[in-house]
Length: 235
Image (cartoon, rainbow, N blue to C red):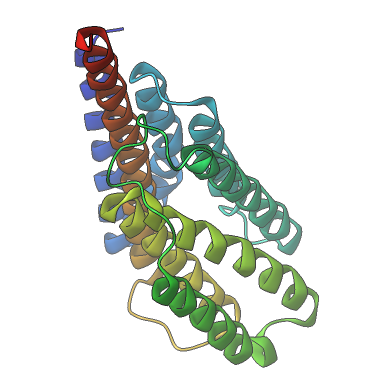
């Protein structure tokens, strides 16, 4: 497929996200029920057309599974949906790890860097503080699953920063989105239209993660081409 198809799919994702957000802001539940399940399949299709890695597509489809399951208010659906999102974070972690196997490689783009100690520490602190504060107010059966999921999510968000500011912002927004869900489960005071803010940060997070990964792959391809050209011209 051509770049035009990729643009059409990305625009379709944007339209579906806009419909979903407007529906949530207006309290129009049918619009949300129709638009939300379309988001990740459209973004996954865009990724496929752009030649994105399978792990990225898998992460998005795991997100789609979680999206659909969380449309239900039943506790079992929530747990299975959380497991689906957790599988997506595993896919992201495995994918990010592929960019750091050979740190001295000339194929590695300059903006792919090692972990920042202070930023990693900030994520660890955020995890400890958030879980500690939420723990007493979470339902007893959800405390351990939420804590385990939070650890996995925080690891994904922290590692996403290695791919640069775009992917890093996506990881941070994903963490924020799921923290908003956790505060709702803990029955903390919420912003007006809390589902609107959850979906706004979530849709932006997935888009930025996709953009960051595809941008990094593009930079790596350019570095490979430049390296190959340099070697071919070296006597």
